[in-house]
Length: 252
Image (cartoon, rainbow, N blue to C red; front, side):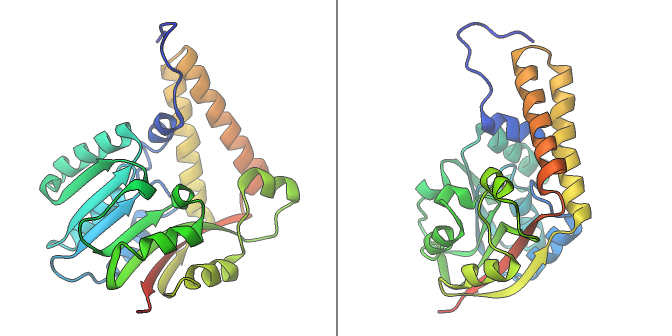
């Protein structure tokens, strides 16, 4: 594939969409553990669900299947991910129960409060966990639930690694940070090394395969991104950075 001189280079949202295409859960969480997290929400009939940074909306589509009377909104900045989400919804006969919005998570405005708000791996949209949970307080009904996924350091990182990956607390600090805005943790899942490896091998491998199949500037960009990510994972944060998905209930 060749690019015309006036074409824009690949953006990060498209690269992410390609990299996640074989692992649309888009987090180091297995399908079985995703189900376990969602089932613990025990949503009422007619529940409203919001997914901020939904990607291909696999979390929300599965929630709609587990809770037949529910409906959902999915919000993401990636047009390609939302297009894939719409296709997945139609394939699973869920198209009439989900509305997809191309927007930044922080820019979304809700007409009514939600019973469950998801923000898994997308707290950067609000500049961190604490402002994310503060903003979500305005989106949930009294007694509503939040399912948030965030990183934590399993072992203290070197200053160089922390500068590269980001500042995260340890697991105890993550829970304290999550509960400080008035939430209580009612369930949680910490991703295993196997879940991490499956996620990372899929992310880097899928993007590499796409790059090989698309020689030219886009393929070069995709391959460079995949190799850089793989090096950062294998020689940096593997078995050091953890990921926790917390089911929180606001203490009204």
